[in-house]
Image 1 (tube, helix red, strand yellow):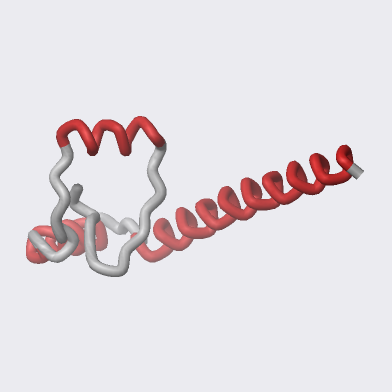
Image 2: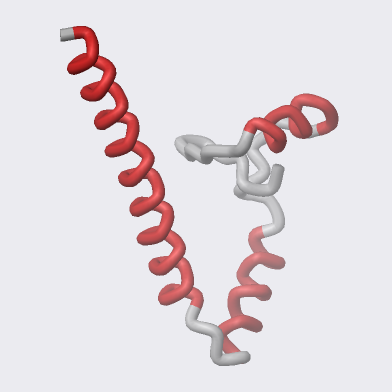
Amino acid sequence: ESIIGKDTINTLPMETIDAFRDHGKAGETLIQNIEEANQAMSELKEKGIDIDKITQKLENEGIDKFSDAYNKLLKSIDDQKRKKD
């Protein structure tokens, strides 16, 4: 719920979507609690945690997973098409 915002996209497992439907609350929560978020980021930096490096790594891993899944989907479609030809 805390990462809902205008012009944002997030993919979720079906279990998470079902849980949100059951007891989640929709709203533009991304812009709430900015001070606390900034404080948390400052604390991470003070502890020597490189959040930019971590987020870049997570972004790259996410892109790889989506790319792999997409390529598998295309291969599956191509395989099915070849079986019919």
